[in-house]
Structure formats: C-alpha cells, structure tokens
Length: 92
Image 1 (tube, one colour):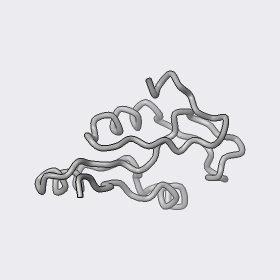
Image 2 (cartoon, rainbow, N blue to C red; image 1 turned 90 degrees about the vertical axis):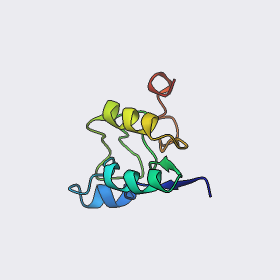
Image 3 (cartoon, rainbow, N blue to C red; image 1 turned 120 degrees about the vertical axis):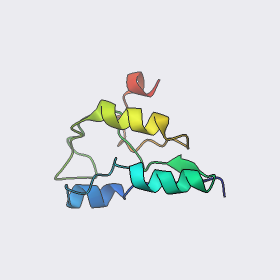
Image 4 (tube, rainbow, N blue to C red; image 1 turned 135 degrees about the vertical axis):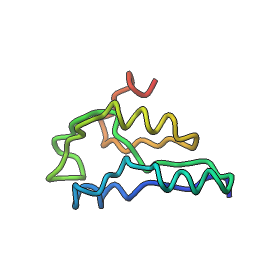
C-alpha cells in the first residue's frame, strides 16, 4: 500500500453540505505519519455541471481551493467531471 484516501466521499458532501469534502487536515496528519501518500477524492475541473450526476448540487463554489488542495496532497489526482465538462486549463 502506497497511498490512501483522506477525504470524505464526494456524494456525502453533496447530500450533507456541512461535511467538507475538501477538508483533509486531520486525516492527512495521521496518514503522513505512517508513511503513506495522501489521496483526496475526485475533484471537478469545471465549477458547474448543469446536467451532471450530482444533482441537485451541480456547482463547485471554490474550485481553485480544491485544485490547490489536490495538488498539495502528494498522492494521485483524479478528475470527477462528467462527459464534456473537463476544463483543461486548471488541470494543467
């Protein structure tokens, strides 16, 4: 095992908005202490998907914050965009 997910599930964040899907601080401390890389669950590269699979909450409020956190997580990065919603600019 080389990495583990440290964030809540994306769907849970959308059902209960007070659960911060991007907040990986506490779990990251533990995972780093045992020598694993951190993996944050998927992120969107676009801030709005009007017919995406996460209705009725198809909008990311702070997209740049999430991209920043994913980049610094040290683990794999995975996109969760729907078809035709990928925004290449923030990914690069």
